[in-house]
Length: 232
Image (tube, rainbow, N blue to C red; front, side, top):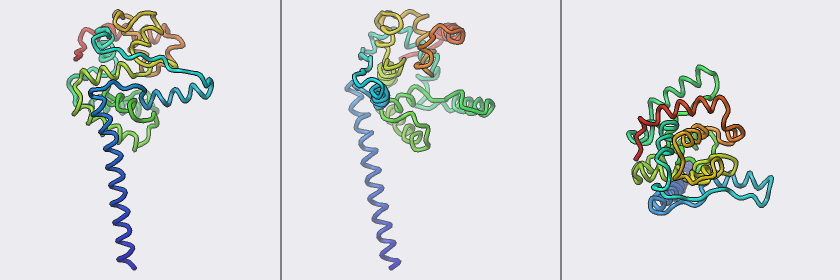
């Protein structure tokens, strides 16, 4: 009887391991595919669209893909300065930044800062939900490693800038530039780029008042840091 139970447990463990391997293989396959093919809608876009359609069944996202060369260099510098100033040097994780975020959150007694790199944010946006569960964070870390291994930094930044949320139903640099300034992403100047970059932590909240005193101050800070930003 005990031998039979042990055999069933072993078989169940093997089946579970195979299912987990197949699931990871699915993620890996898409990471490899998107190295060469531009993503359409990401998992995060699909989530936001579903939320919009609960209020308006005909709602659509504002999103238009543009290649890396047609995105303003100022926006690339601004986003790196604001979101991940060690982007070109790290291998997916900024351990020092994560430690500082933890210390800041502990001091405030709540989550007020994150330590996620651009690569980590992209992993989440492409495949995962916004839920802050241990499983989601673990899966995000695995996908981040694959992105850093299979893609170069230019591709990571290109896909990130084309898929990140910039407002209610607004995704990607082109849609953001047209939503806030009525111009293409290629024509953004330094101040416009800096203002868009500082909106990224909470774009749906900040779009209600993009010229608030807080955003004005943050924009000035990022403008001062942009000249030191290194981009692919």
